[in-house]
Image (cartoon, rainbow, N blue to C red):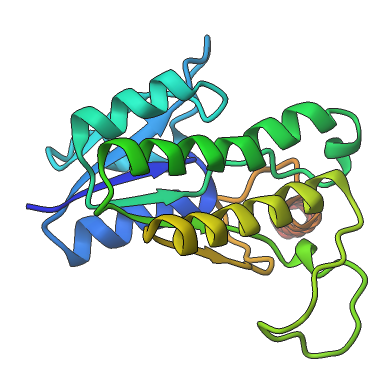
Length: 215
């Protein structure tokens, strides 16, 4: 049975990946969660009783925990979805953004190189890497032109993946993901604020109409 290690597992994209893998494969899934005083397992709650889904404690800012997990689990795949993903906030916490998004990827790659060189690594990037767009639609040849601390951190991760792939022969890929939305997306994102606002207005009007009908 193959093993998949997934970071950022409580987030939107990684939680859907867990759903997909549990449904479409017989792999064992290990979800990395940070130690929080108030755990946020809303997006994965429905899978917590699945015997093929296990939570492990770790943090991309801590190389020791990443190395220990890779060494002990010996994953066949390592899917990295964890990030400081708020573009605006990246200006307020630039060091943490770089630590998680860039050095976090470095720690994952180092752990794989040292303990599980046959593990396949996926790094989740961002369309923010294109930044100042030179032509549309963008393709894989579009040059990076980051315009925020967040974007710089993702470009850094992209080149780290490339260097480890070319220098050490690791199976490592970096994907530039564009915005994708669902009910699992964090309420802090502007798209969710808009959709939640629309939903509140809709239900308020519906309740008023229902009240008037009863009167």
